[in-house]
Length: 69
Image (cartoon, rainbow, N blue to C red; front, side, top):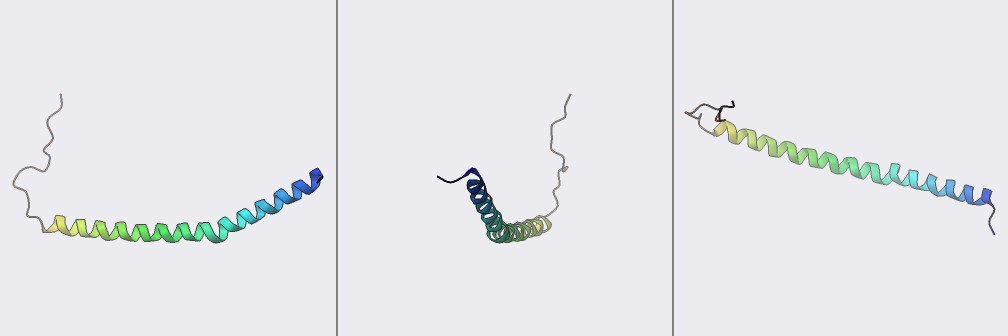
């Protein structure tokens, strides 16, 4: 039967492996995917801005909300 000290060392080693995995695999992948998502969102926002600029000005006031009491 393994001693408490051996179990503790084993747990420490596994935690070190897990930290290394997150640092070397998960974090870079997450950052890369986030950067891609931000680029897609930026491109979409640029297209929406262009569409807004192409629309003719409205002849009605821009604030169409009903008055509040």
